[in-house]
Image 1: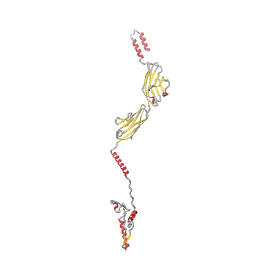
Image 2: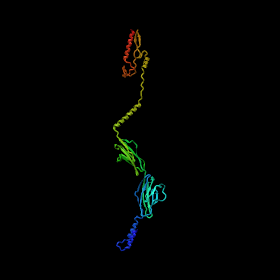
Image 3: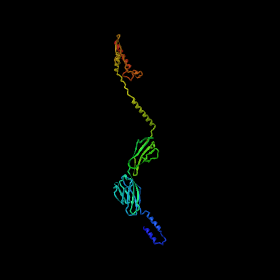
Image 4: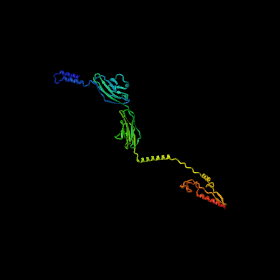
Length: 366
């Protein structure tokens, strides 16, 4: 203003000078000066339109303003909802009125209009509108800052529905999960590197599930999943997928073993032990023969000598005791066989006994 007044004075005091300023030019210059907004408005800037906070931590919603007025600014912060909620209103750094219960002891206002929130909650997330006005200024500075609040991630795991040892051409599903955290995103690593493009690899929409169809020997490797959110990142422990190829020899042996097992089970289920009749003892056989032929004696008894026409004769003969065998059993039909030494007397014993009996008879006759 002082400069303009000086220019007007100079114009009026020196009418004959070579440099003359038209009144219309002076009027337009003054009008343009008042409409530039340098003095009549609060110029406000925001270093960042997005601030990320951690649950339980703090977040600084930073702003800067410029004004040529020496008056204190009136600062107002509101949280945008269906109906805007006033967070804090202050004159300079002095808070005006009573804070809402959810913001008590959690609010701090700086001289430049910045807002600091302590002990962040998930409900603090949203868009914050700020207004800074000064009495001498015609226009109010306005701006907005978006705040996100996330819980840090912890302990990522990989779960499998099947064994980690797979036969070639089988399918496998890997499920990545975590114990805590919000707004998580998932990435998969194979051998420490990002997964390549493969039609056999199928990822769910959020990449939490990894499906490998028809595994090959190339899928035999170490796998990790990485879980991330705006404030943290964790990596799971590695899991090893082992892929093997079943050989034809293995198939033949396994098939033969199964067939043999089925055969053995069938035989054992159908077989019942047979009860072999006991062979009667020599005494019982002798008794049997004595009952049917009383005139005969057993092979163990001495020959009986009787009188016939005044001569002693031997009337006893050996009775060979043996089992009732089939005609085709050659092992028993041969006399003196080693298979039945106890029950079949040999021809030698028979001849010796007969010789002794004849000699005894001759002695009697003499």
